[in-house]
Image (tube, rainbow, N blue to C red; front, side):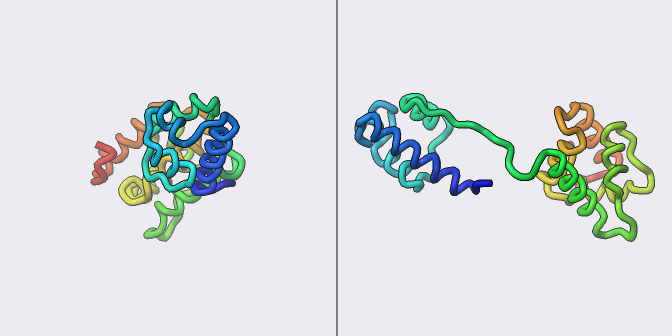
Length: 168
């Protein structure tokens, strides 16, 4: 799996290679794309701080290049189990008992919060990193997450008097 830096470096190399194949200078490519030569140079040298998607898309179109997205990390089923386990572990750090992953998944599917784990779920909703919660929800469904699941979480947060603004 490539890191973000490696991906940007690959993008930079592809842009430079294609520009050279087309016989374009950085100046000419910049003019065609409505960019400055400095921007093209920074992009080709992986030094660009912020280009913006529309500018990058215009540049890639000119060079007849495309971007593709691939899921990162382990296979989906493995990643789902890891994400759910991480979320339930983070919800259980202050408690003697642990929120079982299967209980959490069942609760997400049914919308019924398991009474013995109310405090665990409150801790998760208030304190777990948001990406951990999102990953756990995604992992519980494998495919599309029903909108009602997010409504369940918001309802639980209100019921549990969670203070995190994302649930309001």
